[in-house]
Length: 118
Image (cartoon, rainbow, N blue to C red; front, side, top):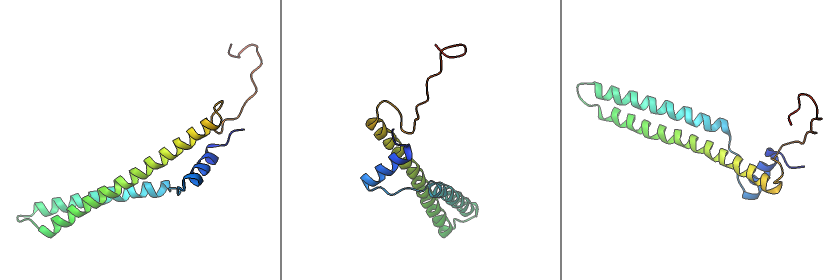
């Protein structure tokens, strides 16, 4: 019987020395990064709205936009890594058991008769 996808993931993490990534942390990185970008843009608009340019406020806004954007992209990258790891584990399961997918259970065939596909 083939291993489930979770078992394949465990095998892949053990063999490659990977550390499991937390999907909630990746989502938190994205949200916090977007909040940082939004706050940075608000600071930028506030610094440019005054009659004279408030340079320290503009620099702080720019820093928040850059750092928030980086944090957002880091969260997105974590999601991509998780997706690629799951795909690699799935493909590893297929190469071990090419006749069925990981986690798939065999069901007995339906008896021939009315209502069954032919």
